[in-house]
Length: 382
Ligand SMILES: *Cc1c(COP(=O)(O)O)cnc(C)c1O
Image (cartoon, rainbow, N blue to C red; front, side, top):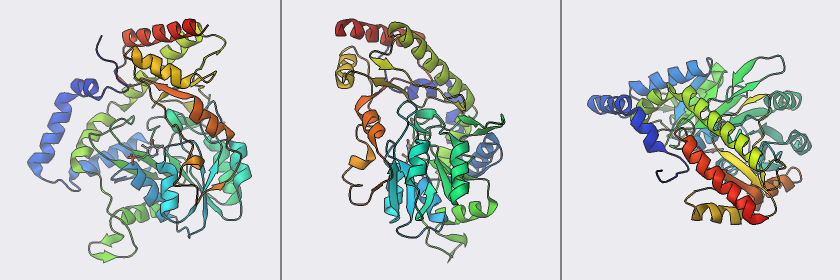
């Protein structure tokens, strides 16, 4: 068996090498490195994939979130609600724009924003909510959109970990995650579900006027070259990355299925070796969400998370803690954050989560080995 990896980008590349290499070669041959045809083509293909949303490609997922907030005309001191258990970028951009991050708790089994905490956190200063579809599972968007309508709030979906996933409304209608809120943001960081070979990101909206504004902000605040209407930034998707993404987008649905199948295999096996969830609580899939397993994340009981991580590592099995410190405890946020609710679950998640290897090339053989070692660990814990 090969060395076990958290993600296997090389194995994935080898299967699509010819298409990828040809795409890259075409960009180099044309020398249109900035805003070449591949950027437009990929944007159009992604728009079709998402069911017609406008797609504004940009330099990375963090920029996507920043540009989204810039386009909404918020003023310093306005409050933006964000879950306390997420990657830093979701909240960092709020602080960067001198807005106030209001941190709210998560549901500790789905890792996504808690609706009760969200309701509790709203004040007259609240202007926007950033639900994060963490680890590949959609937040509960229908009630979030209802709350947003009730209080007149914008919703920016942080879809960096869930591109390809979807949400089912109560009437049965299904929409891709990232296309439901006012604006959706994603990242093409190499290890993301649709990853390029460098940095990349994109912004989605179904509002044409807003799309124009987002495009303008990402392009130095100009619609006509050298005529700048607003302060913007320089955030472009590289043409080479767009060519790579255009190839990989054709495989995204297969990749989602591969991740979902691998997750199902883990969960069935772990339920068998630990039926009472004495040590391991497996991820919960909500019926409103088509989970695309950016990460396969266990909650480890009995304070054994760090010990288990060490044990797995000794058996040649990598694992990762996403994320070890909730945002309310990060130095950077202490001076600016407002706590919108109790944050006990965010803390508990940070103390208990452990993500196992999860990628599109994971074999049953590798998973069997990992499961065997988890079982051995349970025995040694008795
Ligand atoms: C990766 C990620 C981002 C940021 O994306 P970059 O492309 O790395 O800037 C934002 N939010 C979440 C939840 C992410 O996982």
